[in-house]
Length: 166
Image 1 (cartoon, helix red, strand yellow):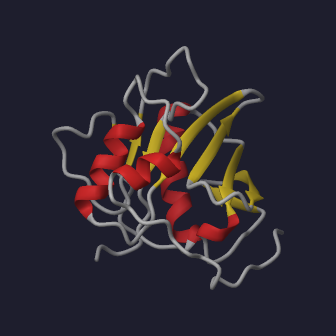
Image 2: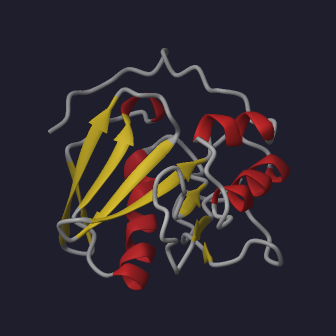
Image 3: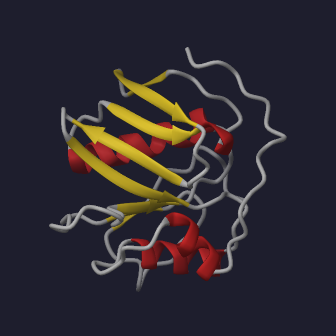
């Protein structure tokens, strides 16, 4: 397993480059139809949010500009902090309990990017397939449908202790 400090690789096209844990795929041109369409996909290495999210946000900030907020599912992570400082910039973290394997990244007041979040324990083949499918221009499938169709089982995270946002 790669160390948690390994930098996040942003791939605009996953067809020719290897996908490893920690990879994020970002569609650099969003589609006109935003409903049900992912702008990217992320495969964190672990469920330790602080070690995983800061690297992703640094990479996204380099491409998108400053990130204001991130919306995540609390059941997917070991801890649920209310914010992170990324490169000296405060990023607010909003938590939900929807269990939908998604992340919303907000830049500015109304600029939202929807990401599929691949469970860390996923194998390389299924993770690659799910990431490619998520960023296809014609994809309108939910995260649940993408994960199921690529052989990624739904994680049972009820055993994870939750801390209060703060």
